[in-house]
Length: 362
Image (cartoon, rainbow, N blue to C red; front, side):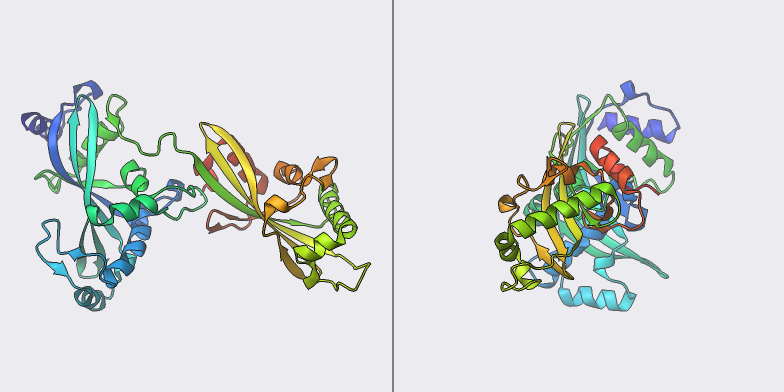
């Protein structure tokens, strides 16, 4: 612990510790604090906002224990939590403050950090309130198998565990051992910089080399663009020539089986496409297609049986042509985030170049 005291004394006195000079320290209890309102869109998710959503229902049904604090002396009942929410006019699910309790140790330039639990709070006109503490062990399995909802800049397959351990969010160190940094908050920033913005310190990153996914949903309209016309004319011709397939696809909801020469007015196509990033390589695959025919939607339930190879658009298979994006289209959603009035082609270029956390920039 002498080396730890050396670090803290050096920071306190204002010494700038070079990256090669930071010492090792033994297991130390640490609290880092996240504010929901301080999480940038570029992170791809909002951990304080999403974590309380998946935990609240389990607290209320009694399957998850909410404690008074890290020492776990008193269990907070559902009635007590509800009473606190009502008296403070706040909601646990809308917690502004998330405290992550961890144990850090530094040895041989490798930082080990282990999460031990979470505490939640909110701000009122009277000051801060605390709802309680949840032990990490009680929710480890849940966090490991549950994906955190991501915005347009996030991924589809980031688990809550990865989000917690990766520390890509905005946070402050609010306690390090016995020091709460209230006398000099700059020491906390210096410590954070020395540990996490230091090329000589190795920090475990669970997200490294993980295959990542995004989905984009977009609409293709029938218009005067040459390539749009080619898409719609090729599809309409195929449906007319293969009327039985069209009817079985769902076309019987738009035209009668008895009509041997039906009018097939295809005006819009909705597509959901999944992008994949693996070791720097980008690929994509169409996940779903809906056709708007004669005023009604027809969904392709099984893309494996959809004859995309038989349907040629300018001598190219339908799916390949759609993936090229050489026509007019409008992106309506990325992951779970709705999109409006954006530069569709710019977003696609960022997807193809791997700039996945910069699809939407403000």
